[in-house]
Image 1 (tube, rainbow, N blue to C red):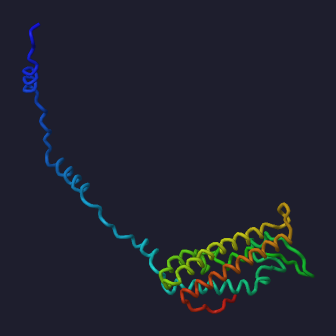
Image 2 (cartoon, rainbow, N blue to C red; image 1 turned 45 degrees about the vertical axis):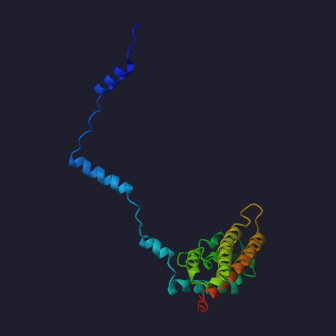
Length: 223
């Protein structure tokens, strides 16, 4: 068979091949595409924080900090008059206390109302000075001296834990009556005593926080 010059054939084939011409873009298409490419290649912009975020991370004002002193005064009041505040005689104060188990003392019908505890530790109303006080305490950390930061952080952790436990034990006590299995008046009082222990720990932690922040004491709370 005759030899075939493949090199000649390949070169000739290549000479006949033509790449397609690139499409022509009019200005209406090319301009936006160029802008998109330039934007993608540009370094990211540093966005300033939103006003809401900046306010949330800023150090609290003296008015905000006064909530802590006022809250401490309310906790002091609760512990000082614990038995009177957590006992309702001759009827109940509202629908919440109506759920409590009653006992008769002499001629008076009295009942323990554990949920009263939540009113004084920031776990009941948004109007309470200690409502979400943990967020305020965290924001105030920058106001504490560097050498006291560890003590402050520990006190805030204790406050958060004990405040939540105080509220939980008060709620548990309120549902420990005879209307529930194994419940009794004695069980209500026992769980309420546990709640008081937690409130005492809450008070101690809050007192430390107020001291480290150098806050003036609030006037004694009274109703």
